[in-house]
Length: 330
Image (cartoon, rainbow, N blue to C red; front, side, top):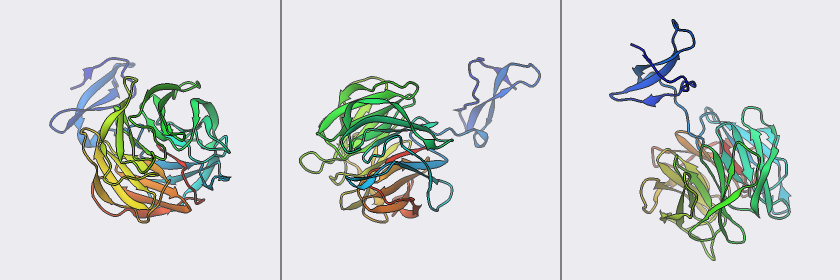
């Protein structure tokens, strides 16, 4: 039996019901223009990944091997099959140390170093690739910060100069970012993770290696709070996000993959290792796997499972070895 629902529910998105059932939206074939929902088996539901995860491709944007050696290259690799990445476009400004955010349809790279700290926010469409366009500016030029993604905004947190600011910019409009709060401690060379409700900042450098994990809310602007610690203090890790856990992978002289729960404030646990120790790669999140792409003088793309504590496997190579590119996914 079909039951009438609001006309505003038009995109066919589904919710989880009870007893293995769900709700499916479809057009009524006998009453033109009406939408209805019906109970269906869970296996037939459409799965829609959150913006901080992807189900198709990972992207690595910008980066470099030395301060004077920057690139504007945007690489893309498939989640469905291992192999080499392909060059699909360029940033508007070549730079290393940008931070990545994903809207679900578009990739954003904010800040970085282009011969000096940059405030540029770049945007390109995942489906089209090509040269990125300027999407506004950060309130403060910075590099080596961390990127987070809510459904409507991108974030750039921390960075050089021992910044502690958390900046937010809208995906839908080209405007200057705003300062919405502060981390518990200023630091740079850190990793970012996202849940459906909060942004996280882990590790980094503050007069020495840091193990701190910070959490801030997407729904209300304000300062971050302490959310535990990594198992190993380090700088230059990369961040990945499953639905329930954040991961910090690698870092200076490290191959450790740490995992911490979004729901509870506890010390992270060792979740395996990268195939090779590296620092400053791009952190990329699929729905079931995390990826670390590149790193200092590295072009390898590593993949590890969210569900099991094992060593990561080599998933292919970037077109160019690079340090600290921005990682995004769709």
